[in-house]
Image 1 (cartoon, one colour):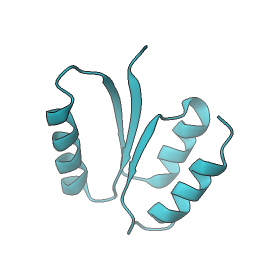
Image 2: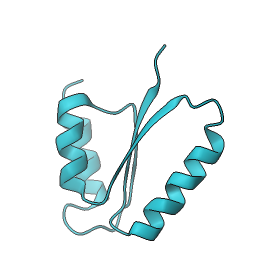
Image 3: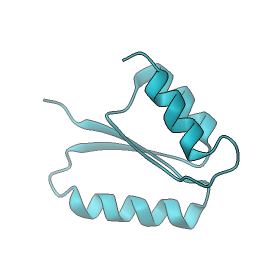
Image 4: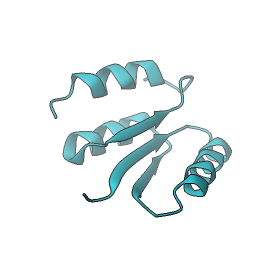
Length: 78
């Protein structure tokens, strides 16, 4: 099996860096292909093109919010 694709989106640079560091700490075997985003629209664009196996979203972002992004991701065809 290939690497799991993980998308992380947070509109706060410092928070995004902290989340990325925590994820990398637990990904000792480098089984994750991690892509980070500061803007939800960029995550959605990439998700449409290639998809993610796992997505970590900030809930309180500038529109669209994390909840709205999650709904759009769920509605996307696999």
